[in-house]
Length: 387
Image 1 (tube, rainbow, N blue to C red):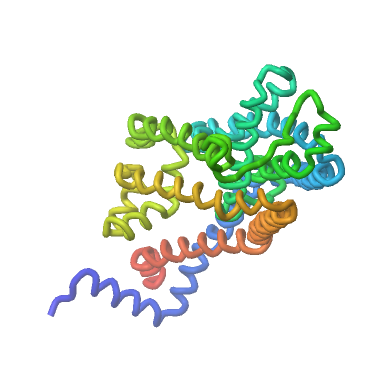
Image 2 (cartoon, rainbow, N blue to C red):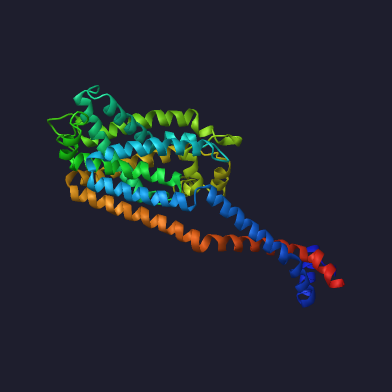
């Protein structure tokens, strides 16, 4: 009976296993090259980390900056808004430059996401108040304060809890900017809400945050004159044009080798597409993964994504912003919890860098080398065996 080609290959490899000298010689042929390649990969990875800012200087500056933030927040809270403004004018442009230079796709459109837009408006408002006191009418200042309180202590504060990339990674400017846009605003509104006397004393011509804070609409006041009402209006003012833009333009940008990416596409590729497809549409995992590779997401997926985003914002107002509005101690405690969570995430990342990353690279490389050597046994190793 004739043997097939796969069967013959198996027989040859089994024969090779009975020839330890041939196997040893074949192993020695690839070992030196494999080790050199592994060392090269480690050097390239180290160079990549250094280029991303993983060095003594940026780490030191990041740690010192974190202590400086805490010092100003605790000792000079009335000036904390100046620190927010100064760091925003440094971090936001730096992050934008990083995003537009990102490969393989330009990530500049990430800045259209809700959290980024809210911080841009926050910076703009502070600049107006700083250089144009009296320009904004008192009524609008109150509405701005109420909506800022809801946005900062609701979805932005909640993002520190649920988003895995919000972390204290001191050497990484991009990651620290992500932490900045989510952690700074609720800290700033803590000062404006609970340290009002100090702020008014230091900046009497700039701020007037001594408002009667009504979280939910009352029978006496209008819907917009509450934290909940003004925040939801601000959210839908962002959501409506963002949704229209996505449906008309954004969803197609990364397709077919497009140069631009969006937060929606990035989030879907990280596993959300598979999860939505499984839970809502009974879509096969293979099809969802194929959509993630090609960025060919369905419109109904975006509808679920947008609805989930809105539900998260709505829920955060009840679970976080409302309790924060009731008590200085609750607000402060939630800030401490968020700080601990973000610090823990950063610690995990640094633990990975120092204990696991390089060993995983080596294991991955040698696994690939082993597969390559195994497939060559039928040719190179059999040649060695005949000699």
